[in-house]
Image (cartoon, rainbow, N blue to C red):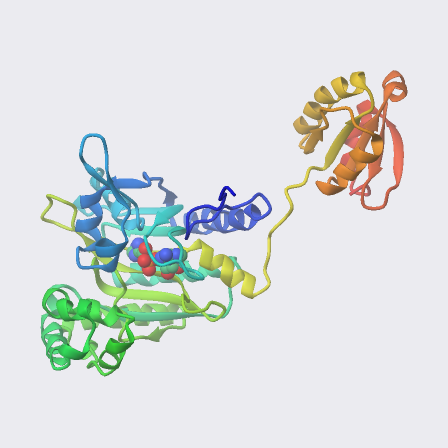
Length: 420
Ligand code: HAM
Protein backbone atom coordinates (compact mmCIF):
# COMPACT_ATOMS: atom_id res chain seq x y z
CA UNK A 1 0.00 0.00 0.00
CA UNK A 2 1.23 3.51 -0.75
CA UNK A 3 2.63 5.39 2.23
CA UNK A 4 1.05 8.82 2.47
CA UNK A 5 2.72 9.80 5.72
CA UNK A 6 5.05 12.82 5.65
CA UNK A 7 8.76 12.08 6.33
CA UNK A 8 9.62 11.18 9.96
CA UNK A 9 9.81 14.19 12.28
CA UNK A 10 7.59 16.34 10.04
CA UNK A 11 3.84 16.89 10.23
CA UNK A 12 0.97 18.12 8.16
CA UNK A 13 -1.01 20.88 9.81
CA UNK A 14 -4.66 20.38 8.94
CA UNK A 15 -7.33 23.10 8.59
CA UNK A 16 -8.91 22.01 11.92
CA UNK A 17 -5.63 22.77 13.73
CA UNK A 18 -4.64 25.96 11.96
CA UNK A 19 -6.53 28.37 14.22
CA UNK A 20 -4.20 27.39 17.11
CA UNK A 21 -1.26 28.37 14.90
CA UNK A 22 -2.89 31.65 13.93
CA UNK A 23 -3.28 32.35 17.61
CA UNK A 24 0.51 32.03 18.21
CA UNK A 25 1.21 34.17 15.15
CA UNK A 26 -1.40 36.82 16.00
CA UNK A 27 -0.01 37.14 19.53
CA UNK A 28 3.51 37.67 18.09
CA UNK A 29 2.22 40.31 15.67
CA UNK A 30 0.43 42.03 18.54
CA UNK A 31 3.07 41.93 21.30
CA UNK A 32 6.43 42.41 19.54
CA UNK A 33 5.51 45.66 17.72
CA UNK A 34 4.66 47.11 21.16
CA UNK A 35 8.42 46.93 21.78
CA UNK A 36 9.30 48.39 18.38
CA UNK A 37 9.94 45.10 16.57
CA UNK A 38 8.96 44.64 12.90
CA UNK A 39 8.57 41.34 11.05
CA UNK A 40 11.46 40.18 8.84
CA UNK A 41 11.15 37.22 6.46
CA UNK A 42 14.36 35.60 5.29
CA UNK A 43 14.85 32.55 2.99
CA UNK A 44 14.47 29.09 4.51
CA UNK A 45 17.89 28.17 3.10
CA UNK A 46 21.18 30.01 3.27
CA UNK A 47 24.74 29.36 2.17
CA UNK A 48 26.11 26.70 4.54
CA UNK A 49 28.98 28.95 5.71
CA UNK A 50 26.47 31.33 7.29
CA UNK A 51 25.50 28.64 9.80
CA UNK A 52 29.00 27.18 10.22
CA UNK A 53 30.44 30.59 11.06
CA UNK A 54 27.41 31.89 12.87
CA UNK A 55 26.40 28.95 15.08
CA UNK A 56 29.89 27.45 15.53
CA UNK A 57 31.43 24.39 13.90
CA UNK A 58 31.72 22.54 17.25
CA UNK A 59 27.98 22.55 17.93
CA UNK A 60 25.72 19.48 17.59
CA UNK A 61 23.60 21.45 15.13
CA UNK A 62 26.45 22.10 12.70
CA UNK A 63 28.19 18.76 13.20
CA UNK A 64 25.23 16.41 13.07
CA UNK A 65 21.91 18.03 12.32
CA UNK A 66 22.06 20.26 9.26
CA UNK A 67 20.21 19.44 6.06
CA UNK A 68 22.83 20.54 3.53
CA UNK A 69 22.86 20.07 -0.22
CA UNK A 70 24.67 21.39 -3.26
CA UNK A 71 22.89 23.58 -5.77
CA UNK A 72 23.49 23.16 -9.50
CA UNK A 73 26.39 25.61 -9.33
CA UNK A 74 28.14 23.44 -6.70
CA UNK A 75 27.52 25.86 -3.78
CA UNK A 76 26.61 24.27 -0.48
CA UNK A 77 23.22 25.39 0.84
CA UNK A 78 21.54 24.46 4.13
CA UNK A 79 17.92 24.48 5.26
CA UNK A 80 17.97 26.87 8.19
CA UNK A 81 18.34 25.01 11.52
CA UNK A 82 17.54 28.24 13.40
CA UNK A 83 16.65 31.82 12.54
CA UNK A 84 19.33 34.02 14.08
CA UNK A 85 22.27 33.47 11.69
CA UNK A 86 20.13 34.15 8.59
CA UNK A 87 18.55 37.21 10.19
CA UNK A 88 22.02 38.60 10.95
CA UNK A 89 23.16 37.84 7.39
CA UNK A 90 20.19 39.82 6.15
CA UNK A 91 20.68 42.75 8.52
CA UNK A 92 24.43 42.87 7.87
CA UNK A 93 23.58 44.27 4.45
CA UNK A 94 22.01 47.24 6.26
CA UNK A 95 23.72 49.61 8.67
CA UNK A 96 23.51 47.30 11.70
CA UNK A 97 27.29 46.78 11.86
CA UNK A 98 27.83 50.50 12.41
CA UNK A 99 26.15 50.14 15.82
CA UNK A 100 22.63 51.05 14.85
CA UNK A 101 19.91 49.17 16.57
CA UNK A 102 17.55 46.94 14.55
CA UNK A 103 14.57 45.21 16.13
CA UNK A 104 13.01 42.37 14.16
CA UNK A 105 10.88 39.29 14.73
CA UNK A 106 10.29 36.22 12.59
CA UNK A 107 7.96 33.26 12.32
CA UNK A 108 8.63 30.14 10.27
CA UNK A 109 9.89 26.60 9.79
CA UNK A 110 13.35 25.41 10.88
CA UNK A 111 15.04 22.09 10.08
CA UNK A 112 17.27 19.88 12.21
CA UNK A 113 18.10 16.23 11.53
CA UNK A 114 17.45 15.12 15.12
CA UNK A 115 16.01 11.81 16.31
CA UNK A 116 12.25 12.49 16.33
CA UNK A 117 10.54 12.31 19.73
CA UNK A 118 7.67 14.07 21.50
CA UNK A 119 8.46 17.78 21.12
CA UNK A 120 11.51 17.09 18.94
CA UNK A 121 10.85 17.44 15.22
CA UNK A 122 12.95 17.55 12.08
CA UNK A 123 10.81 20.34 10.69
CA UNK A 124 9.57 22.55 13.49
CA UNK A 125 8.50 26.17 13.72
CA UNK A 126 9.88 29.06 15.68
CA UNK A 127 8.71 32.49 16.54
CA UNK A 128 11.74 34.56 17.41
CA UNK A 129 13.09 38.07 17.90
CA UNK A 130 16.49 39.72 17.44
CA UNK A 131 17.55 43.12 18.74
CA UNK A 132 20.90 43.80 17.10
CA UNK A 133 23.54 46.50 17.11
CA UNK A 134 23.71 47.54 20.79
CA UNK A 135 24.75 46.09 24.13
CA UNK A 136 23.08 47.07 27.40
CA UNK A 137 21.82 44.94 30.30
CA UNK A 138 18.52 46.84 30.05
CA UNK A 139 18.03 45.46 26.52
CA UNK A 140 18.63 41.90 27.75
CA UNK A 141 16.08 42.33 30.52
CA UNK A 142 13.61 43.92 28.11
CA UNK A 143 14.00 41.02 25.68
CA UNK A 144 13.37 38.44 28.40
CA UNK A 145 10.33 40.31 29.70
CA UNK A 146 8.99 40.56 26.15
CA UNK A 147 9.17 36.75 25.92
CA UNK A 148 7.26 36.45 29.18
CA UNK A 149 4.72 39.02 27.96
CA UNK A 150 4.23 36.87 24.84
CA UNK A 151 3.69 33.75 26.96
CA UNK A 152 1.24 35.67 29.13
CA UNK A 153 -0.69 36.74 26.03
CA UNK A 154 -0.90 33.02 25.11
CA UNK A 155 -2.14 32.28 28.67
CA UNK A 156 0.78 29.89 29.22
CA UNK A 157 1.23 29.58 32.96
CA UNK A 158 3.49 27.13 34.82
CA UNK A 159 6.73 28.08 33.10
CA UNK A 160 10.09 28.76 34.72
CA UNK A 161 12.78 31.16 33.54
CA UNK A 162 16.35 29.86 33.82
CA UNK A 163 19.12 32.43 33.60
CA UNK A 164 22.89 32.33 33.35
CA UNK A 165 25.84 34.17 31.88
CA UNK A 166 28.51 32.86 29.54
CA UNK A 167 30.58 36.03 30.10
CA UNK A 168 32.29 37.93 27.30
CA UNK A 169 34.90 36.03 25.26
CA UNK A 170 37.68 38.00 26.96
CA UNK A 171 36.30 37.37 30.46
CA UNK A 172 35.89 33.61 30.32
CA UNK A 173 39.53 32.50 29.87
CA UNK A 174 40.30 31.70 33.53
CA UNK A 175 37.00 29.85 33.98
CA UNK A 176 37.66 27.87 30.82
CA UNK A 177 41.02 26.67 32.19
CA UNK A 178 39.39 25.56 35.46
CA UNK A 179 36.63 23.73 33.59
CA UNK A 180 39.15 21.98 31.31
CA UNK A 181 41.15 20.86 34.32
CA UNK A 182 38.02 19.46 35.98
CA UNK A 183 36.96 17.41 32.96
CA UNK A 184 40.50 16.34 32.05
CA UNK A 185 40.66 14.43 35.36
CA UNK A 186 37.80 12.20 34.22
CA UNK A 187 38.39 12.17 30.50
CA UNK A 188 38.50 8.41 30.00
CA UNK A 189 35.03 7.96 31.57
CA UNK A 190 33.33 10.55 29.36
CA UNK A 191 31.64 10.10 25.97
CA UNK A 192 33.69 10.26 22.79
CA UNK A 193 32.31 13.68 21.79
CA UNK A 194 33.16 15.20 25.17
CA UNK A 195 36.69 13.78 25.07
CA UNK A 196 37.21 15.72 21.87
CA UNK A 197 35.46 18.81 23.27
CA UNK A 198 38.00 19.10 26.12
CA UNK A 199 40.46 20.22 23.46
CA UNK A 200 38.14 22.00 21.04
CA UNK A 201 35.32 23.62 23.04
CA UNK A 202 35.08 22.64 26.67
CA UNK A 203 31.87 24.65 27.29
CA UNK A 204 29.95 22.32 24.99
CA UNK A 205 30.46 19.55 27.57
CA UNK A 206 28.07 21.34 29.94
CA UNK A 207 25.36 20.84 27.31
CA UNK A 208 25.98 17.07 26.92
CA UNK A 209 22.98 14.90 27.82
CA UNK A 210 24.88 11.55 27.90
CA UNK A 211 24.48 9.82 31.26
CA UNK A 212 28.20 8.89 31.50
CA UNK A 213 29.05 12.64 31.41
CA UNK A 214 26.30 13.95 33.70
CA UNK A 215 28.13 13.06 36.93
CA UNK A 216 31.11 15.21 35.93
CA UNK A 217 28.93 18.02 34.61
CA UNK A 218 27.02 18.17 37.90
CA UNK A 219 30.24 18.27 39.91
CA UNK A 220 31.81 21.01 37.72
CA UNK A 221 32.83 24.17 39.65
CA UNK A 222 30.55 27.20 39.55
CA UNK A 223 31.78 29.25 36.61
CA UNK A 224 30.34 32.68 37.48
CA UNK A 225 32.87 33.20 40.27
CA UNK A 226 35.73 32.69 37.82
CA UNK A 227 34.52 35.10 35.16
CA UNK A 228 36.06 38.56 34.82
CA UNK A 229 34.64 41.47 36.83
CA UNK A 230 33.08 43.28 33.88
CA UNK A 231 31.01 40.26 32.88
CA UNK A 232 29.93 39.61 36.46
CA UNK A 233 28.83 43.26 36.76
CA UNK A 234 26.95 43.01 33.49
CA UNK A 235 25.10 39.94 34.73
CA UNK A 236 24.28 41.59 38.08
CA UNK A 237 22.74 44.49 36.19
CA UNK A 238 20.63 42.17 34.03
CA UNK A 239 19.39 40.46 37.21
CA UNK A 240 18.59 43.74 38.93
CA UNK A 241 16.75 45.09 35.84
CA UNK A 242 14.66 41.91 35.79
CA UNK A 243 13.86 42.34 39.48
CA UNK A 244 12.88 45.98 38.81
CA UNK A 245 10.42 44.82 36.13
CA UNK A 246 9.11 42.16 38.53
CA UNK A 247 10.38 39.14 36.58
CA UNK A 248 11.07 35.99 38.57
CA UNK A 249 14.16 34.06 37.45
CA UNK A 250 16.27 31.14 38.60
CA UNK A 251 20.01 31.20 38.07
CA UNK A 252 21.12 27.94 36.47
CA UNK A 253 24.95 27.86 36.47
CA UNK A 254 25.13 24.89 34.02
CA UNK A 255 23.05 26.60 31.33
CA UNK A 256 25.30 27.25 28.30
CA UNK A 257 22.82 26.66 25.41
CA UNK A 258 23.59 24.64 22.30
CA UNK A 259 24.86 27.44 20.06
CA UNK A 260 28.36 28.90 20.26
CA UNK A 261 27.53 32.51 19.46
CA UNK A 262 26.44 33.45 22.98
CA UNK A 263 28.39 35.93 25.10
CA UNK A 264 26.96 37.27 28.40
CA UNK A 265 23.31 36.54 29.17
CA UNK A 266 21.72 33.17 28.28
CA UNK A 267 18.23 32.03 29.22
CA UNK A 268 15.67 29.33 28.69
CA UNK A 269 12.01 29.00 29.58
CA UNK A 270 10.95 25.49 30.54
CA UNK A 271 7.39 24.30 31.02
CA UNK A 272 6.08 21.78 33.49
CA UNK A 273 3.48 20.38 31.06
CA UNK A 274 6.09 19.04 28.62
CA UNK A 275 8.10 15.83 28.87
CA UNK A 276 11.84 15.46 28.33
CA UNK A 277 11.94 18.25 25.72
CA UNK A 278 10.71 20.86 28.17
CA UNK A 279 12.29 24.06 26.77
CA UNK A 280 9.58 26.16 25.16
CA UNK A 281 11.98 29.00 24.37
CA UNK A 282 15.63 29.91 24.61
CA UNK A 283 17.91 32.77 23.78
CA UNK A 284 20.63 35.10 24.87
CA UNK A 285 23.11 37.82 23.99
CA UNK A 286 25.36 36.93 21.09
CA UNK A 287 28.28 37.90 18.88
CA UNK A 288 27.91 36.48 15.40
CA UNK A 289 30.77 36.35 12.93
CA UNK A 290 29.73 36.26 9.31
CA UNK A 291 32.09 34.71 6.75
CA UNK A 292 34.92 37.06 5.71
CA UNK A 293 34.19 39.62 8.40
CA UNK A 294 36.44 40.46 11.34
CA UNK A 295 33.92 42.26 13.53
CA UNK A 296 30.97 40.37 14.95
CA UNK A 297 27.37 41.56 14.85
CA UNK A 298 26.09 41.84 18.41
CA UNK A 299 22.55 41.35 19.60
CA UNK A 300 20.09 39.79 21.99
CA UNK A 301 17.20 37.54 21.04
CA UNK A 302 15.21 34.41 21.63
CA UNK A 303 13.18 31.82 19.77
CA UNK A 304 10.19 29.84 21.01
CA UNK A 305 9.30 26.46 19.53
CA UNK A 306 5.74 26.75 18.24
CA UNK A 307 4.98 23.02 18.50
CA UNK A 308 6.08 23.17 22.13
CA UNK A 309 4.02 26.30 22.81
CA UNK A 310 1.00 24.37 21.52
CA UNK A 311 1.90 21.39 23.71
CA UNK A 312 2.10 23.70 26.73
CA UNK A 313 -1.30 25.21 25.86
CA UNK A 314 -2.78 21.73 25.40
CA UNK A 315 -1.46 20.70 28.81
CA UNK A 316 -3.38 23.70 30.21
CA UNK A 317 -6.49 22.72 28.18
CA UNK A 318 -6.33 25.91 26.12
CA UNK A 319 -7.53 25.14 22.64
CA UNK A 320 -8.38 27.28 19.65
CA UNK A 321 -9.02 24.44 17.24
CA UNK A 322 -12.08 25.08 15.18
CA UNK A 323 -13.51 22.94 12.39
CA UNK A 324 -13.00 24.75 9.09
CA UNK A 325 -16.70 24.38 8.36
CA UNK A 326 -18.74 26.66 6.10
CA UNK A 327 -21.64 28.68 7.43
CA UNK A 328 -23.77 27.70 4.47
CA UNK A 329 -24.10 24.68 2.21
CA UNK A 330 -26.18 25.48 -0.88
CA UNK A 331 -28.27 22.63 -2.27
CA UNK A 332 -29.88 22.92 -5.70
CA UNK A 333 -32.65 20.49 -6.60
CA UNK A 334 -32.43 20.39 -10.38
CA UNK A 335 -29.94 21.75 -12.93
CA UNK A 336 -31.28 25.31 -12.96
CA UNK A 337 -31.09 25.67 -9.18
CA UNK A 338 -27.53 24.27 -9.13
CA UNK A 339 -26.55 26.81 -11.80
CA UNK A 340 -28.16 29.68 -9.88
CA UNK A 341 -26.44 28.62 -6.64
CA UNK A 342 -22.94 29.42 -7.97
CA UNK A 343 -23.52 33.22 -8.16
CA UNK A 344 -25.50 33.07 -4.90
CA UNK A 345 -22.49 31.49 -3.14
CA UNK A 346 -20.25 34.25 -4.56
CA UNK A 347 -22.63 36.95 -3.32
CA UNK A 348 -22.67 35.44 0.20
CA UNK A 349 -18.85 35.25 0.35
CA UNK A 350 -18.65 38.93 -0.59
CA UNK A 351 -20.86 39.53 2.46
CA UNK A 352 -18.30 37.61 4.59
CA UNK A 353 -20.48 34.53 4.87
CA UNK A 354 -18.59 31.31 4.08
CA UNK A 355 -20.44 29.18 1.56
CA UNK A 356 -20.04 25.99 -0.44
CA UNK A 357 -22.38 25.23 -3.35
CA UNK A 358 -23.04 21.58 -4.24
CA UNK A 359 -22.15 21.18 -7.94
CA UNK A 360 -23.90 17.84 -8.53
CA UNK A 361 -27.51 16.68 -8.62
CA UNK A 362 -28.16 14.61 -5.51
CA UNK A 363 -31.18 13.61 -3.47
CA UNK A 364 -32.18 16.04 -0.72
CA UNK A 365 -31.50 13.32 1.87
CA UNK A 366 -27.95 12.70 0.60
CA UNK A 367 -27.28 16.45 0.44
CA UNK A 368 -28.44 17.01 4.02
CA UNK A 369 -26.29 14.11 5.18
CA UNK A 370 -23.34 15.81 3.52
CA UNK A 371 -24.22 19.17 5.14
CA UNK A 372 -23.97 17.42 8.51
CA UNK A 373 -20.70 15.75 7.58
CA UNK A 374 -18.99 19.05 6.79
CA UNK A 375 -20.53 20.72 9.88
CA UNK A 376 -22.36 23.39 7.85
CA UNK A 377 -24.41 25.66 10.10
CA UNK A 378 -27.17 26.08 7.50
CA UNK A 379 -28.38 24.15 4.48
CA UNK A 380 -29.88 26.56 1.95
CA UNK A 381 -32.14 24.61 -0.36
CA UNK A 382 -34.02 25.56 -3.51
CA UNK A 383 -35.73 23.71 -6.35
CA UNK A 384 -37.76 24.76 -9.43
CA UNK A 385 -40.59 26.20 -7.34
CA UNK A 386 -38.38 28.36 -5.05
CA UNK A 387 -36.46 29.57 -8.11
CA UNK A 388 -39.68 30.81 -9.64
CA UNK A 389 -40.77 32.51 -6.40
CA UNK A 390 -37.30 33.99 -5.76
CA UNK A 391 -37.00 32.30 -2.36
CA UNK A 392 -34.80 29.76 -0.57
CA UNK A 393 -35.42 27.37 2.30
CA UNK A 394 -32.96 28.00 5.08
CA UNK A 395 -32.51 25.01 7.39
CA UNK A 396 -30.61 25.36 10.65
CA UNK A 397 -28.62 22.14 10.94
CA UNK A 398 -28.29 22.17 14.74
CA UNK A 399 -32.05 21.85 15.41
CA UNK A 400 -33.60 21.14 11.99
CA UNK A 401 -35.86 24.24 12.05
CA UNK A 402 -36.38 25.88 8.68
CA UNK A 403 -37.81 29.04 7.16
CA UNK A 404 -38.58 30.16 3.62
CA UNK A 405 -37.10 33.56 2.89
CA UNK A 406 -36.64 35.81 -0.19
CA UNK A 407 -33.27 35.14 -1.77
CA UNK A 408 -32.30 38.83 -1.69
CA UNK A 409 -32.80 38.81 2.11
CA UNK A 410 -30.65 35.70 2.67
CA UNK A 411 -27.43 37.41 3.74
CA UNK A 412 -29.15 39.80 6.16
CA UNK A 413 -31.17 36.87 7.55
CA UNK A 414 -27.96 34.85 8.16
CA UNK A 415 -26.29 37.83 9.82
CA UNK A 416 -29.01 38.28 12.46
CA UNK A 417 -27.52 37.52 15.89
CA UNK A 418 -30.68 35.59 16.89
CA UNK A 419 -30.12 33.17 14.00
CA UNK A 420 -26.58 32.14 15.04
P1 HAM B 1 17.24 26.91 20.36
O1 HAM B 1 17.28 26.73 21.85
O2 HAM B 1 18.06 25.99 19.55
O3 HAM B 1 17.64 28.41 20.09
O4 HAM B 1 15.74 26.81 19.88
C1 HAM B 1 14.75 27.63 20.45
C2 HAM B 1 13.49 26.79 20.71
O5 HAM B 1 13.10 26.11 19.52
C3 HAM B 1 13.68 25.67 21.74
O6 HAM B 1 13.56 26.16 23.06
C4 HAM B 1 12.54 24.75 21.37
O7 HAM B 1 11.34 25.22 21.93
C5 HAM B 1 12.47 24.88 19.86
N1 HAM B 1 13.16 23.75 19.20
C6 HAM B 1 14.47 23.61 18.98
N2 HAM B 1 14.73 22.45 18.35
C7 HAM B 1 13.54 21.84 18.16
C8 HAM B 1 13.13 20.60 17.55
N3 HAM B 1 14.00 19.77 16.97
N4 HAM B 1 11.82 20.30 17.55
C9 HAM B 1 10.92 21.14 18.11
N5 HAM B 1 11.24 22.33 18.68
C10 HAM B 1 12.54 22.67 18.71
C11 HAM B 1 17.69 28.97 18.83
O8 HAM B 1 17.26 28.44 17.86
C12 HAM B 1 18.29 30.35 18.84
N6 HAM B 1 18.32 30.83 17.45
C13 HAM B 1 17.48 31.28 19.73
C14 HAM B 1 18.02 32.66 19.74
C15 HAM B 1 17.54 33.73 19.05
N7 HAM B 1 19.08 33.08 20.40
C16 HAM B 1 19.28 34.37 20.17
N8 HAM B 1 18.36 34.76 19.32
